[in-house]
Amino acid sequence: MIALSGPTQLFTVIALVSLPTVMFGGYSLLGLLRKRKLTDEQRAYFRAGHAHAGVLLVLALITLQLVAAGGLGAAGQWVVSVLLLVGILAQSGGMFLNLLPDRKPLAHGVTVSGAVLLAAAMITTAVGVAVA
Image (cartoon, rainbow, N blue to C red; front, side):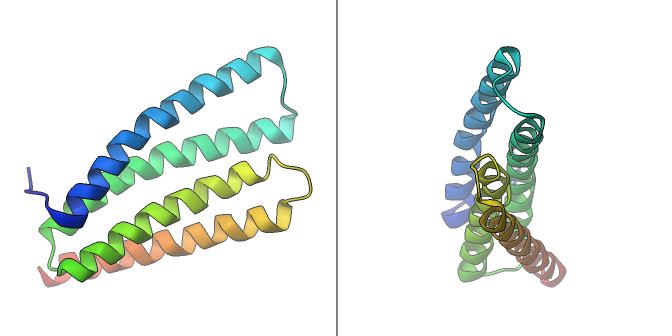
């Protein structure tokens, strides 16, 4: 295991603590599905937002290990950590915004922004691994 410190340690803790919230979201989704409270479109966005949040948190845990082992300095580690956190919140959160009426343009913009931030985090991590 790679020794974590500073931003990689902090954001690893944030990701680990966030995972139970995703688990609770799955439980909530099951309750709403049983009660048939969602339209087909709402169900699709709820599932997509929930699935993306879980998968992206696991990706963040792996990425933070690579960042800790890579050649990025403290500033680069902070940048990647923040990009990951905000990117995950935006990517999955944008899908949840689709549950609200008349929010499609906002939801799309938030989701796309999250994807761009996550791509920037991945490219920065790749640079850090390449220079290590």
